[in-house]
Amino acid sequence: MSLTVRELDIPGVLEITPKQFGDERGFLSETFNAQRYAEAGVDVAWVQDNHSLSASAGVLRGLHYQLPPHAQDKLVRVVRGRAFDVVADIRPRSPTFGRWASVELSVEKWNQLYVPKGFAHGFLTLEPNTELLYKVSDFYSPECDRSIRFDDPDLAIEWPIADAGPILSEKDEQAVSLKASDLPAEW
Image (cartoon, rainbow, N blue to C red; front, side, top):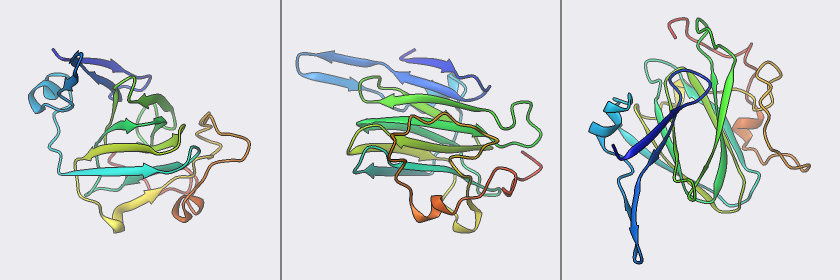
């Protein structure tokens, strides 16, 4: 298989590293192949690709999720720079509810993060001009879009934030706590 797959501390959350085939000219990498990913446990019909650019180091985006019927699986990768990428289990009936896991995504590592439905997702850029590409399994739905505070004390995520603090959007500044979040019981 041309993928290395590692499950993080929460079952179902995967770090996936596609193989690069290189020579003096550069490299080729199959960054997504539906058959190989299905064999690795990621059998998802992707419907949309998103591209995010953060001009500064210290930009924090998240923690974001969508409610059913528009909940999203995500497959996230960095194509320039580095990001501290986080998922938090927000499935109320899950034995790992409220736990989080993280991985550094970078061009050098060439790794990806698979985020299943029922997880909030966010990232902190570690370098200027960091770009992320990610696939999602459902279309963006403003009425289903939700945010949880990055600094929620119940999650206690250990972000590598500089003394100046993170750079947040207005949406993320207004995010609610995990306890105040709209979480469907069916997750």
